[in-house]
Length: 338
Image 1: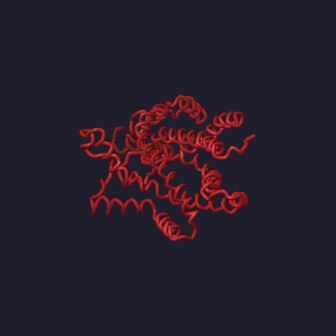
Image 2 (image 1 turned 60 degrees about the vertical axis):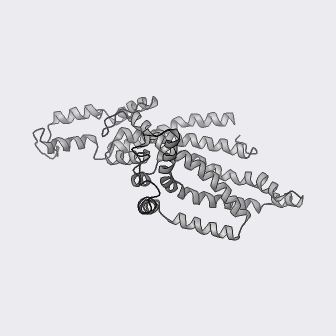
Image 3 (image 1 turned 45 degrees about the vertical axis):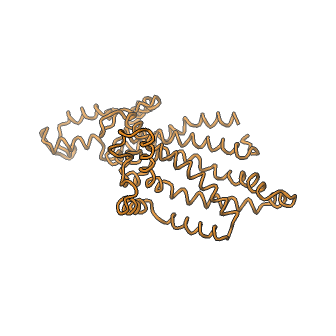
């Protein structure tokens, strides 16, 4: 296992290199970058004399164009630009944001706690509820409980997050006034004590959290149910029951552990939630998380922010896959990676 982990850790380097290099080339060569935006602003603001030509569609003097390229670091060949970016990225120095005009690292660190809160809470609640519910549905297969739960899960899965968020905001927050319309806290938040702040945070979290959880919640529950049913049909279960072992001992000591092995494969992708955020949910509920930051940066071609998010998300996802492998061993010690 130790050799396997060392091998996987060393593979992080070429994997990150391949991902970031490909994304860097695509991002930098995409049209509508910061230089083009700056040239358009200069042209329409009348700050410089314009002389349009086929080689210079913006009509800006070449000296100004060269100075802008030097300012943004685009005066060097692409491989050199990538080498400079990679050298800085290793120390988590991602430069300045073109549109927010502040260090990218500070900008991301400001948004990470928001996405982390939703990610961690939804991760814990989803797995706790889905594993319990999936097992209960499998044990009571074809019962009224199983059929009712299946119908509810299908209905929840069929509702798009955008529609669910709008419905919750219109009825639960607007018409019935049971929850806040958006944001993470009110104007009176900092005047309350610790307990009052906690209650207000929970109150603001409920609606967006429901939207965060609904998609993964329904899929994971059905996945857990199917895994449990598959294990129940295997020979070792019948052998254990024939030896006189109680049903609960068979279900929760043997079947449950084996049914959890496929669930562990999703741990790696789940870690991506911590930084991925959700553009739709953050937009609806006015939450300044990573999802909204990534969208705004992509629209404005804010290369430094885009590449920083790609680098950090890739690193987290790769480390998440290693954690998934460790989870295999914890759940089923028979697995041998050698």
